Image (cartoon, rainbow over all chains, first blue to last red; front, side):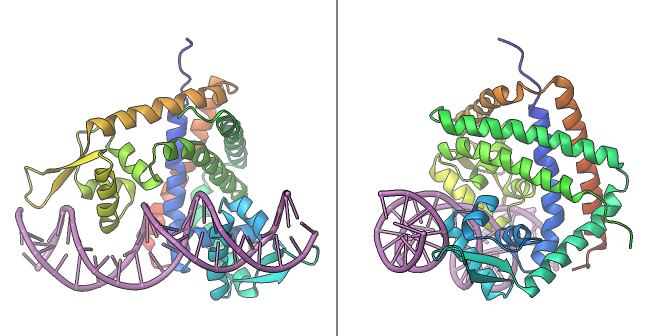
Length: 155
Length: 155
DNA sequence: TATTGTTATACTCTATAACTATA
DNA sequence: TATAGTTATAGAGTATAACAATA
């Protein structure tokens, strides 16, 4: 039995860092009258030409039945539109409206302005290194996830 | 207008990495029949002598009205108990039951076993670098959060 | 008067399964 | 038959405000 690798502190750090981000961004999101799920969708649609609910669900991890309701509410707020998918009669394209685009552009610069100050202490190299570190970490987690999914039953 | 700092990809990576972890651990949590909020409470109570709902809410970021219901459901599952707070007639102490303790101890080693495989590809140096990177990132975020919290009103 | 915790309200998210329409 | 998306259902989380009991 090899000694256990010290990844628990790393995970704890990951969770704390994410929570710090969540706490930070929650104020902005809430001030827009968006729920986390709705914001997730808006953020995913930002800077795209739109996508079908299937792709949207895959990216946001929202299941299709749930996504219908989330998109409905964004529709009611006038932030997204549903367009027919020209290449598939069953499909549709969900896309930000002009107003949705404005909201998208509004929240990220707002984040940016605040965060820019905070991040000004980190060099470009540090940012890159952090990003790379997170990427490795994510890959490890995704492998574990795939494995867990495959070998399921270790309940 | 200065060029935008390149921390957006870093944040996106942070979110994705966290989501990978979430997705990974969700299986274990779900297999225990616990919701994320319930697991949050159990994990917070783990390795403690219990605490009052006020503290519990502060740590889990669950508001008091919501927390009552979450604790109710954990109570129904026999995982926690409500004890009177000897030092405050209004208060109570929420504490894991023996069964709750067992669940707590059960889920964390289970995480470790799976994750150990995933992390075996990362060297100790890589783990340390990742942790350091996250720590810097978190400090930046917490500074931003503190600033946002202080200057609030930019809603 | 302030604080702890419960209750009531209303809305959103969530997964799942059954269903319609198109491929 | 398979897939895209909707609808129905039931449960849980969420914030908020009003309330009781205690400090």
